[in-house]
Length: 341
Image (tube, rainbow, N blue to C red):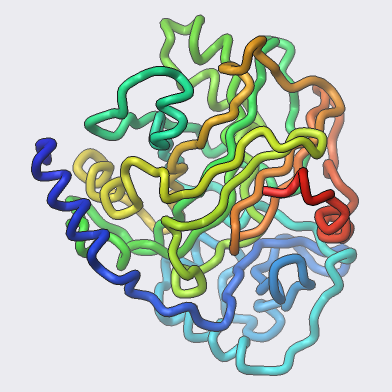
């Protein structure tokens, strides 16, 4: 366990290190379904907002789930590199259904109050150690799926977050080795029922964070070598087109390396595990007066280089996607400048 002086030294060392992965050709891994395919498939998104290359058609021996894909490590990644170097058919975006890039991970680890500007918003001190909680994997839904507003809560709120996806098993991982355990990054929406998080259940956060559909992810797992610097990305959330959160991941108190080191003291991290790294200011509960999501609201969570996820809030019993498949990119380009991140 690091004291405050040790953590400052570690932070200085990590900041002094150049981001060790030079951006390569964009590797954006997805899980998807299509009417002509049996079950979920692994694919490559051909650029942010592009169509999908079916990796299982390119190499039938590849696993069809992301967790199994990541468990096989370099062997499967080498197949993807070959696919990137080959001219392959691209399925139009309108013909596929995007799933969360990772489904059924062993664990979803979350970090509270991990943005300095979010701490200022609450008028609370910046934490000296990461504040860890969790969501159940059953909360995960796809990047364009509906969020079900539970009748048990009247205070459902939004939180855009950078999610880290683990690619290699590890315990007691050193900060200098941490990035070797990362597969990549994706966009997360940490939907939160504030009445359950902050008032009920003994003020334990779990139940307020883990209702079904409370963890949209996507659109893709962008591999770490495809991201220039995960700690210098614009991050924002819009509700019905209005910017509610707008910040930068450089405001994170504990960076990816520190979080992996901290969490791996307590639990073994497995391929496919997800770490939600905290949210910037602008959430509904701290607005004056507070603002919460209601039926019909559309939430867009966007992170530079990673993409945007779009989820509509509905009452129980409504299924399907919150936005017409294949039209989300066109919709994003229609956003006026004052509503951009």
